[in-house]
Image (cartoon, rainbow over all chains, first blue to last red):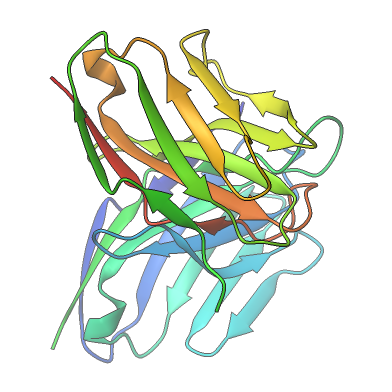
Length: 115
Length: 115
C-alpha cells in the first residue's frame, strides 16, 4: 500500500534527447510527489514537486506529468545534458493524520546522458 | 545557501559496537528526519522528529536505534549494537514545516560500514 514503483532502473540518452522516468503509487492518501536528484557522494536534492490538484508542472527543462486516476506520475527532462547524469528518485508523502513528512521513495533511475 | 551537514562522512565499526551519527540541520528548521540507503537500493525512511520527540518511525527503527537533539543545533542517530545489515548510507534531512508538503533538505550522508 505504501510502495512507490519506479522505472526504468537505468536510462541512457543522447545529449539533446528527452529523458522520461515513470512512477506509480498505490496509496491514494499521497498528496505530494517530489522528484529528487542525487549525484555520487551527495545527498538527494529536490528537483521539482507536484501536488495532485494539477496535471502538469514545468520548471525549466524539467516537467512532471501527473495522472491521478492512473496513480502515476512521470519526470520528463527535455534537451538532456551530460550534467543531468545522476540518479533520480521519485517520492511521495501525505499531509494528513499523523504524518510528519515521511517520504516514500521509488527505487531510483540511473540516468546517463552521452555527449 | 544554508545546508544540512553530517559527520563523519564515513564510519567504520565492528559488529556489536555503538555508533553515533551526527547532523546539523538548517538553523530555522523544526522538523528532522533520518533516512538510510543500502548500497544500490532505494532511500528508506527511518524516523521523524519534532519538538524533542519522535513523530513517526518505520519498522526498521527498532530498539537498537535512538535519536536525540542534545542541543540547539545537533541532531543525532545512535545505533546501540550494530549489525552487519546496518551497513548503509545514512542521510539526515530537515524541513521548516511538516505535513508532508514542505521541502526536505538532505545532508551529504554518513557511510556506515559494519565489519
